Image (tube, rainbow, N blue to C red; front, side, top):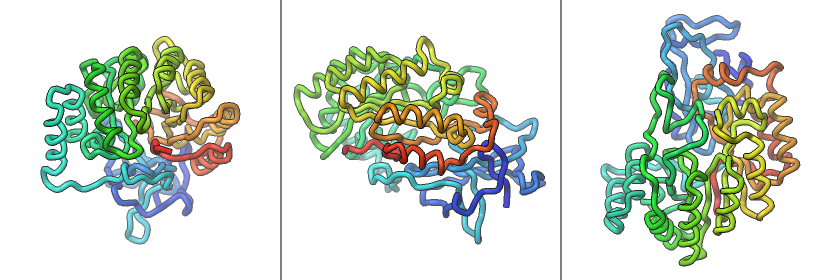
Length: 385
């Protein structure tokens, strides 16, 4: 049995392993040698990891010895994987389910036909053109939902950001050593284009959701005037569905403007409830974790459905200090849901930035259990209700 990395090297427990669910992608970690029980590197072998499908939260990381010439790992979420009784197993647990987030297999040109049909109804819409790229090239579910007319639909709006996340998937520093897995949107979406997409979706999809703030863009709160006008335009024509904002929560006053305009729900992202760990990852420009917390509190006080988009990483999320900070916040501010997200980053790069735990971690299962014990729903997706 190979070692796993949970912030400290250890043997995975049987209750941490499940048969790899459909949609799991095994991946090799180049120039990295797996570590076996006893701490010895397995010669002539390459470390194995797995990328989980949506709806699962990883519990452990692959443990390996990195060779001096090993390239940086691309921005994916690497999960411990091993073979048990000739079957691939992963260190993960099921944390949510939604048909709208279940990977589907398209027949040749099927998705492209949906895209072409939808674009033909609004051929001049530049945002729809961007979503076509996201849906077909990057396989983004919320972009695909625009064309499949289901669930949560994307409304990218902002090419600019006020954070410089070390794991940003749409824009990396030139000297990062690896490329961004996708290109950030270049144009500032206009009110008419956004409203047309949103209205079409909400009028055709029962309990539909439209969401500003996507992985292909920067921070939507930097486009507060455009978003507020789009929300007002949408709500002037239909009360249907949910208007959601995905945001880093950096600008509480701008969020308040959107709430006044008619925003229904907000999902605020963070990697930590500790100031130093948050700042090390997000590298915020002109704001701090206190501003994020203020945004959460204000949205809760205004009666919005508020979710926290928690970027999880074994060895950090389940550090006793992190769990205590999470407990303190969730006991004081009653959010509706914590949505776990796998933090897509080279694990060694993340540990080098934020540090490894000083004491043995509590374990990801315990960290997630404590969120539920605080009376907060745990999941992965924005649900209509």
